[in-house]
Image (tube, rainbow, N blue to C red; front, side, top):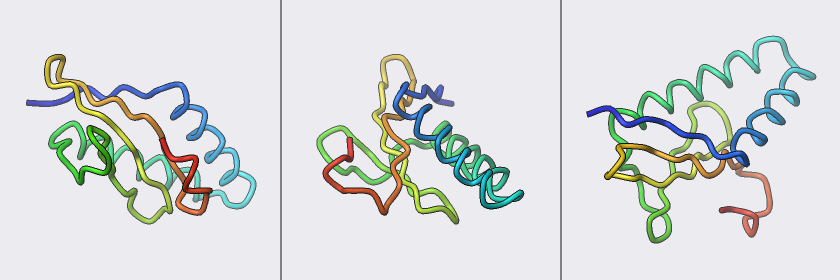
Length: 96
């Protein structure tokens, strides 16, 4: 059963800022970052039951990039809501 991926407004902003940053420094990095995100979305749509971090919040590390997707699963609606695309070098107190 495939789960639908929903991005929070916070996640959308974090992803856009990351793409903007990578665009300034490389031609390939933004494309690779988006590819990594799409791969993570595919994994989550198939099997969202990754490592549980805190209560109902789960996490998935992006491949080749220092970001973690924090998300919750709603089994009633078969959705995965991504709460944050958090950079690992940021202040850990700002995690969702």
